[in-house]
Image (tube, rainbow, N blue to C red; front, side, top):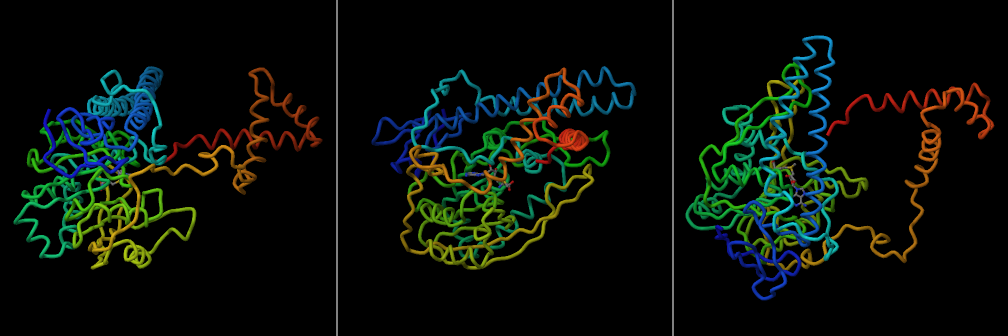
Length: 467
Ligand SMILES: C[S@@+](CC[C@H](N)C(=O)[O-])C[C@H]1O[C@@H](n2cnc3c(N)ncnc32)[C@H](O)[C@@H]1O
C-alpha cells in the first residue's frame, strides 16, 4: 500500500510520533498504538476502534432505512391512481436509488468484516460530536465535484479566491517557490484542499475531516475515480425534478501533493509546529465547543510566523449567549492563545444554489488571516478528549435538577399517559371516561383535551423535518 509522504504525523492520544508502514500508522516508540487505514485514509481518532464501530452503526442504520424508503416508494407507485403521480414517484425513487448506490460505493471501505472489525471499547473516553450526521453536508459533494455545473464551479472559485486574497503576498510567494505544509481542517468533500494543492504544487496539503462519506469520496475522486451522484434540492421548483443527476470527477485529475486523514480538530494527529498554513473553510461556527478550544488546538500545529486562514459563515449558535462571539471577541481569544490577528474581510457568496431549487441561498463569508506568535500555548488536546457531562463520567455525583428537566416532566408524562392508553381497541369515548375519572375533569373538557392532543400530535408529524 502507498505510504504517506508527510512526515509529521503523531498519535492523537499521546502525541508520540507515528510512522506509516504502508498498512497502518503506528507509534515509533510504543508498539501498542496502531491506527488503521480505511480506504487508504489513516483513521486517526484518539479511540479508533470505538469511533469506527460508532460510524458503522450510523451507516448501517442509514443504508437500511434508505433501502426501506425505496421499497415503500415502490408500493406507493403501484397503488397510485394517477399516472402522473406514478411517474413523479418513479423519478423520486430513481434519484434515491442513485444516491444509495453512490453511498454504498463510497462507503464500501467502512463495511464490517474486514480486519477493522474490532471490539467496541472506549479507551480514552472519546466520542464523536453528536451533531455530525452522515448526510449533513451531502449536497457539498456535488457542489465540489460535479462536472459541467457552472454555478457550483463559481461557488468553489469564490471560496478559493477569498482564501488566496487574504494570504499575505510574501507567504504566497514562498509557498509557490518551495515546499510548505498546509492543512485544511473540516475539509468536507475536499474541493478547497484540491484547489489549494493545485495552486501550490510544491507544497504538501493534508485535508482533515471526521465524516467518512465526504472524506472517502474526496480520496476516491482525487485518486481518479469517476462517480455518479445527485444534488438533492431543498425545495424543488418542479416536483418532477427532485434532484440533479451529476457526474463527479476531479477536474484536473489527481493532485499528488494532497492527502487525507480522518481526525478531530480537537485532537489533531500532527506534531507540534508542523504547518506553515492552516485553513478552516466553513468550520468554526458548527463546532460544539467554545472557539478558544479551536484556537489553542490549531496553535499547537502551526509554526511560529505560520498562518491561519479562516473563511465561511460566522454564525455561532450556542445556547449560552456568551459563547456566540463577535469577530472582535474572537480576536481577543486568538491574541490570548498564540495568535496575532492580521486582517479580515467579508465576502458574499451564493451557497449551494441550483436551478432546480425554489429557494436561493446566499451567505456571508467572514475571512481572516491570523499569524502564529512565538508563545507556547498550553492545551492538552491530545489526551482524553471528551465533552461528557461531569455527573455522567462520575456516577457518584448527584444529578442536578436542571430547569430543562422540570419543564419536560409535565408535558412528557401527560403524553406518555395518553399514548399508553391506546391499545388498538379503546375508543375516544373510552379514553374520555378514563381521563375524567382519573383527573376529575368534566367529560367535555376531557374530550377537548384528548382531541386537541391527538390532532396536534399527528399533524405535527405531517411535515418532514428540514435537515
Ligand atoms: C459546514 S461543513 C464544511 C465542509 C467544507 N469545508 C466545505 O466548505 O464544503 C463542516 C465540516 O466540518 C467537519 N467537522 C465537523 N466537526 C469536526 C471535527 N470536530 N473535526 C473535524 N472535522 C469536523 C464536518 O464533517 C464537515 O465536513
